[in-house]
Amino acid sequence: MSKLFVVPTPIGNLEDITLRAIRILKEASLILAEDTRKTATLLKHFSINNKMRSYHKFNEHKVSSFIEDLFAQADTIALVSDAGTPGISDPGFLLVRACIEKGIEVECLPGATAFVPALVNSGLPTDSFIFEGFLPVKKGRQTKFKELALLDKTFVLYESPHRILKTLSELSMYLGEDRKISISREITKLFEETFRGTVTEAFNYFSSKSIKGEFVLIIEGKNK
Image (tube, one colour):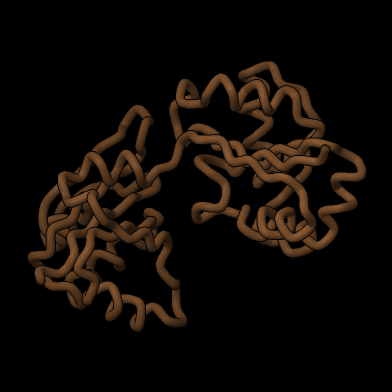
């Protein structure tokens, strides 16, 4: 029976892959990878030699449209992104939806994702939170900040190193300089760090140093 496995991969430390994920990657007839070169390094580390094919944001509509053709060649397909869980700010949603519409079984393995450890480590309320992922780069960005300013729950953002200061500046403008924030970067990697303080303090801290790595921002909600 045809089946799609959504397989989380480490976001840094290779020890964070599960034994089950390794087994599924070894058994899959085909592995769909966001970047086959990056995934090849991971597969080599675990002595996996299965066939790969690219599945990324530039071709996901095309690949998802002929999902039946893919499964005619492979009865089990494993989907991976460059790091973390596919479908969480990475390609995956369209493929999962296409499989469901075609009656193809989908199973998502539990595993690494960046925002969960950052959220738990933040010290901000975790009983109820909102995941926003990456903000719009241009269109709709101002509107989104106005919406975020009204949220009364902890919310989560992803940000890249070359936009982090701009985002912090805009958070200060729309949410206020004293809004509490926790910022984690390089999660599970050698230079992992977490900054906790106000939005203004965060801006000053990261302005004074070389900015590297992907960022997860955990921001307190508006006081009721």
